Image (cartoon, rainbow, N blue to C red; front, side):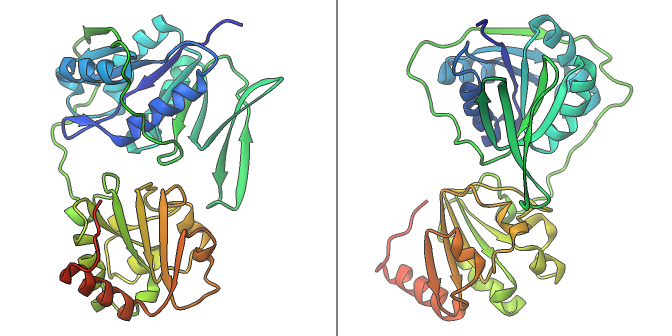
Length: 330
């Protein structure tokens, strides 16, 4: 059986690779477990250093595509820069994170390549007919199995569905950097501005402390922030109901209509556990739930269940940490 070629489109943020990119590498390795290693494409302005870094740490061959117009993401310029290289490579699979970039770029690439487009992939399956994929739909109420009907497939990988790739100890991959042609699009991105505060930088957080309607009132967000603040890489999340009430902005929202996260530790405070919320955090490595209702659905997925009034439990925990009687680190 001929080995399939797999291409990963890397995503950059703040001068480095996003966590989701490393998760896509793990996905691609599983996808190609019976075949060749994948290859990585990095579009950007100055990417040689990053290309050499990921080639060394992953052992995967890398192609960097450089152009002034690729400094800031736009689907138009990225599609134009990537397309010719993809056609030359003739991959069976093109893989991207299911991020704002990924689900914006993937459909256009699929059209250009005459490929199927399957988004938010959560699992890979294989039977006698070949490889197919599964994903959640309708806020986790439906599990869909999708079989590509084309020889080429563009895939986006749901954040948290795969563990981020670890550094490899073997030989480095090769690196090739090419210059993209000027005039990559009919429009130009001149500025992007980050609107995220530290506490809402959910994607890079190791620990997320999330507030639900069960915290009682907006003033109780103070203890949620304090709890998140004891971790070096802690962030504050929220259920949709908290955002709808105006207690926190929607940039904090986790769930089907918000952000999808996969931190090492997720602390759900006063969150009942509706499927819409669970779909956004179910791949967290450890879940601690604090709720006064012992039958709350969130306890069904939690590793540790604390049936207690959080306005009593969290201050007591913070006091223990403050006295040095408890050790918490991220």
